[in-house]
Length: 235
Image 1: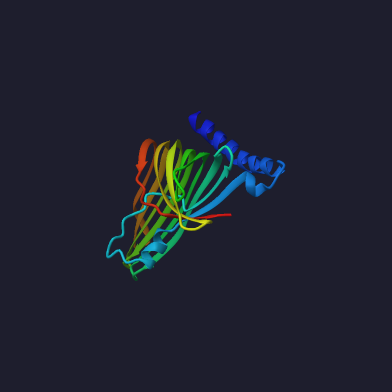
Image 2: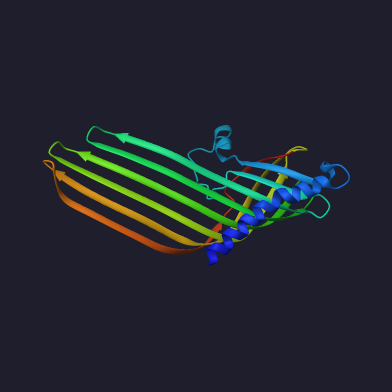
């Protein structure tokens, strides 16, 4: 029941964002004077290539690679959408073992925003987000030693919903370009499903067959420190 409510709320808020934007366009006066539109992209990899941080390769705990934020200029209230998507297909073959791994992960957040100007160069934004994660990983492994072949398949999927606040800080590099980071504290709930099967074939005859399934609920409180760097542009 909680998952359905969170999903419905996320969809309603996601649909309300373009409607709110269209309403501001319909107001009298210039649209540019009514709202601020900012598009951001996670730029940690770019900064590692530009600047030399030695061997430091700290993991980034923020999966939202692309963000879009619009703020009503007068009220300083608006909304934000964050999206992260990972699609990896890895194939390995060393002659005896073939391994194929597929990863398909989607992260989505939508929420209301409140902009707080601090001074001429710094702004702070407080968001209240609704979250949805859809994660899937498949692995197929085949080991062949002539008379003995072992095939192993596993499939792990996870569906998570949640909510929580995010505090973002931006520094103005120019009139339209900003550099920023954010910290968040999210509550997530959902479940993990895992299917596993293995078969060993000796001289063409299946000798050992194993199959397992699991379905586990999960609850998380996640505090994400500001390790992600966002390069943002005001449209």
